[in-house]
Length: 294
Image (cartoon, rainbow, N blue to C red):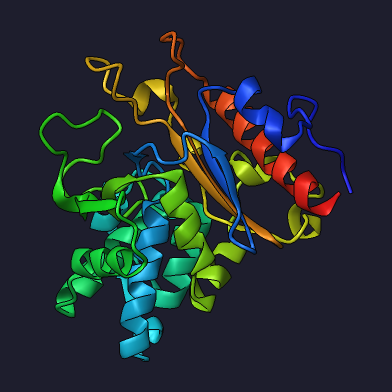
């Protein structure tokens, strides 16, 4: 197995909050014990909306077994409205199943797939936001709020990184959550969602510092991170430095689940660069792996 990148420091889990005081995180072991720092502080979904969307679709598929086999058409219009993902670079129409679309949404943050999926669910008269809210409520996630679809347009006072009306950054849903709530969500994922997460390509989040690479990486599940899409300046409101968008990441490891959020600015107002965010999140993921597998 390869060694972690030199920039990722191998620290004891108890040292993380001191080394990265601006990092909010929660680590929950299989027996329910939790460690963390500011784990109950609310933050934007900031990359984890696609995970809640996947859970909502899994709920729908449990009642409609044929849903995951339904075929979606990715049109040119959806390509123009996509802000992330490799399929936005491909011309012409593409057809794939809902199951394949979820694999790409969770695994690569593909916005063209998000747009096609949301249109299909709307045409089927499914209330995606209501389904996501019901899932959140069923898990008792009192600090998580789903405020709407990503394609509903930039809300008043929104961030420059927000998608405009009808466009997507690969999130699907808008809202706020906490690291602690995300750990609860991760601890109760259905097998279908874990399968979509298992195909995720995430070189810059919590999984980025794990030993190994590609198919040889240690066993884990994660989601594609938002940190690859824009720098900190594109993910915050420059007129409101106290309300940064930042980066969120999640990780499922044998024996533990991890959720973290890194604001786009540190307490002193210093901007956090994407590479710095990747290093910080990667250090946490590596520390958790060592804590449970050393």
